[in-house]
Amino acid sequence: MCRNITELRGLEPAATDEEIEAAARQYVRKVSGITRPSGANVGPLEKAVAEVTATTTRLLDQLPQRRQPPTTVPPLRRPEVRARIAAAAK
Image 1 (cartoon, helix red, strand yellow):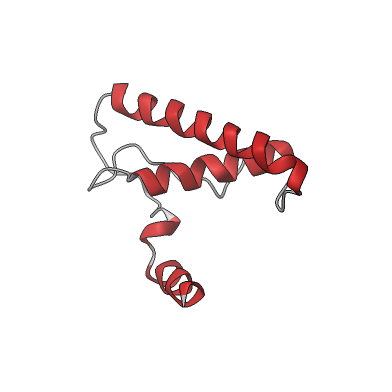
Image 2 (cartoon, rainbow, N blue to C red; image 1 turned 60 degrees about the vertical axis):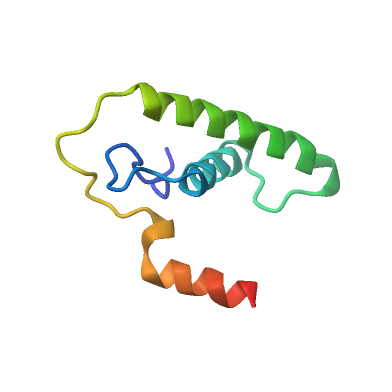
């Protein structure tokens, strides 16, 4: 459905809470069709992100380990994304 959401199962080191939340946020944005929520939409969208994050965390905890890591690197592990986040924080 959304090719921007990368596989988190089997990462070394394991997926962080930040990576799981980022994937949940992308999923919620995609299915809702809302990328920039208005004041009325923030609450429901944040609740959905929290629920998807919790469900994804449970899922990853319950699945067996993979034999090979995923072929793609999650965005939050890419140097160019890290640099962009650091620049925006300044």
